[in-house]
Every structure is written in C-alpha cells, then in structure tokens.
Amino acid sequence: MKLLIKQRVFSWTDTYDIFDEQGNAKYFVKAEFLALGHQLHVYDAGQREIGNIQQRIISFLPTFDIETVNGIVGSIQKKFTLFHPEYEVNYNGYRVEGDFLGWEYDVYQGSSVVMHISKELLNWGDTYVIDILNPRDEILGLMLVIAIDAANCSNKND
Image (cartoon, rainbow, N blue to C red; front, side, top):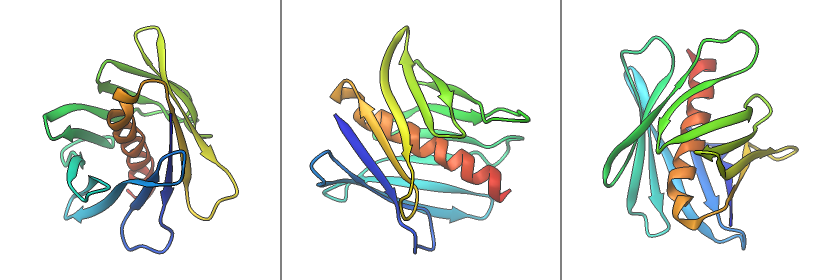
C-alpha cells in the first residue's frame, strides 16, 4: 500500500495532506510553533488526533519524540555530519538506510524492509511517497517520515 504526503505551499505552519493510492484524503498534519521548538499534530480523516511529534527543547541536535494515542513510541535525532544527513532512530525497532538528502531511503525492522520512502520531484511543494509493505505499519511509518522532515526543516531554520 502507498501513502502520498503533500506539503501545503501557502500555509503559515507546516501542514501536510496525506492521501491513499486512490487519492482519498486519509490523514492531515498541522504544526504548532512553540516558543522553543515546534510540535506536529497528526489527525485521521475524521479529524481525531492519532499522534504528535514534539521537538525536544533541551537538545544539541534536532530531536523529536513521537507519540501515538498509546504513549511515546520513540524518538529520532539528527546526527552531526558534514555532507549528508544521518539520523539516530530509536523508534519501533526501525533502522533507516539510504539517501536522506535525495529522500530515497528504506526502513528496516530487523533484516526485513518494511517501507520505502521517496520524494517526488517537480511538484508544487514537497511531495513524498511511502510504500508500506504491511498495513499495520501505516501510522508508525507516516509519523517517522513526518519526524524526519521536521528534523530536516528544523536544522535549516535553526
């Protein structure tokens, strides 16, 4: 199954619309900027909050905690590197490998690929595609991609 994530271009905050393979609206993400960081709220199509991504205030490098309705499920921290982005992922047993700069990477759980993430070029605003092998990984995969995008944007704005 696939999800298409489209960032709204003319929005005061980071806002994303997420669609399924048939083009149906499935999720919505809206950012809330706080005094010392930002938080992203993830909603389902019924406008119920299913999770949030909160930037840690006291952290040398951009770090985000990922929380669902069941509590905090992990975090992602951007590592200090000179040439290409790398992340320390402490989230659902996932390991992330690939070209973050070009937005082509795979997410592994153990030795198995659970999803592939890519960025579509030549679109108005950032557009990402998540190809998820197991539907049970859908929400966690979506939250991971949004957290990585937030870490990239946070690093550019800090």
